[in-house]
Length: 254
Length: 327
Ligand SMILES: Cc1cc2nc3c(=O)[nH]c(=O)nc-3n(C[C@H](O)[C@H](O)[C@H](O)COP(=O)(O)OP(=O)(O)OC[C@H]3O[C@@H](n4cnc5c(N)ncnc54)[C@H](O)[C@@H]3O)c2cc1C
Ligand SMILES: Nc1ncnc2c1ncn2[C@@H]1O[C@H](COP(=O)(O)O)[C@@H](O)[C@H]1O
Image (spheres, rainbow over the protein chains, first blue to last red):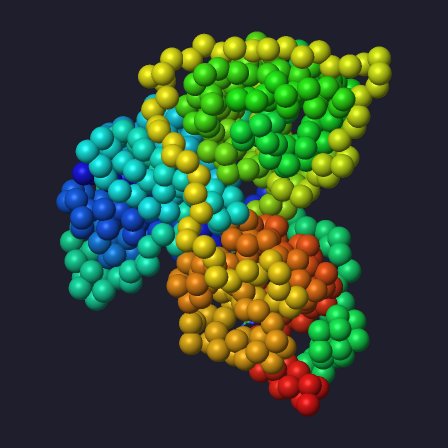
């Protein structure tokens, strides 16, 4: 089974965010980046499926030069090959435009299964996988926790709201968007890191955007504070004493 | 038709209550545009539910029914709504940002070469649609530049279901039945019945006091300091999703949209950023206290009291102070 995993590189969660001078995105100059968290789970699922059923795991990422570090990490964890769609203008492409880039690369590979994360940490659209499936004309299921290969295709466990789940069966080829927590993530081993150096990363130039964007991001800004939070200050001991006062007299928890 | 069409969600004849938040958003957008708002109900039981909508301020109510729409599938819903939208021709299509909408709406928008503006928290004049970036650290304004219908899904809790406007006696909505053309072979996936995992042994919904820990704790070994605080307070221990994903605490202690919904007297959030999926599970708490090193963390947006600082310094000091106060 050939599995294609779309992974996105996003700013580290603890990164100090500042807004870019043009007010349309964040200042990227001093940021450190990492793999989008659900995508790490998508990769893990792919690696485990390969261990069980054999086949190949190919990782795919669209973005500027810097994303190759994330692809290399995926190779070190066990992916067989990587495809880098080199594009410096993702900010000027909407979901449809980015999914189109991924779709072109996917068509060239014709995988049996495509995995994406359910949502990216930075844009938080939660859409790219579903749009990609639609562009490719293959069935999809979202927010998936477990994947089982059956004779007819796949049986997947889909998360629903409030602690509910359901199983969904579908034929292959298919696309799944993976939720975090389904598996335990592996670390890259020293051996894996060494081996990654011998693995292939293919770079393809992104085709120029053909259609105008259907939606545009006009401006980013810090959310306005709506709520008046009383911030308690002082040394840890002083803050603790103030909190105890609140717990005693306001909350009546002590 | 033009105007706004709201796609309501239901399962087995029961509303998803978020549908009414989307309906309120749809009515407000229509008012801004000086246009009409309509609604559509899909699936089995749509008739009865549509009757309920007749009392709302709506131009038209569509019921979309077909034997192949009895249970939800993305394929069925996308095909049915595509046909409905081609006929009704709305300028804006509003949906609640539910798991089901996440599953089909991006594909539906793609059929029209449009892009869903997902998880919207406000609508301003323009119209400008506001959504969150970086898990709530920033807001962003989006505009539709497309030529087809503009698809928008609204975040849970940002519009009030009670704000849905009732209709007037003279302006009752027209109900129209819409039967899409569907073939069984168009539906490629087979959904099973929803189920819950084995009975939960921890019921956080009844807890009076909750101490909740997030990824700020860094490592499993560190959870002990939060456990000690919970013990000192006599509180239940809860967590954000990543803590449970990592297996540091059992799944049943997870609070949020995919975990438990809690409403204790005290919710003490430690090293939790306050992503919307966490907030929906705990916003009903009477008092929220947050300890976080990032003064811009969205958790402070729901906190009554906040401490900006290192949890590794503050939590042990607090445990000590609580124990001292109790003795
Ligand atoms: C469909 C879906 C469903 C989801 N369901 C849920 C759900 O049910 N429940 C849930 O919780 N999440 C859920 N999530 C995930 C959610 O989006 C967030 O990713 C998650 O809540 C983040 O958890 P966190 O706040 O612990 O971690 P982070 O966002 O990483 O935040 C960690 C925080 O700790 C602070 N911190 C770090 N170090 C320190 C220190 N030394 N002292 C003080 N503070 C520190 C940081 O400033 C940061 O604010 C869901 C996501 C999706 C897409
Ligand atoms: N530039 C990209 N390169 C590769 N995969 C991507 C890219 N953008 C989004 N994805 C995939 O699509 C998923 C959902 O992203 P989003 O729609 O932005 O929330 C991510 O988890 C990735 O798996």
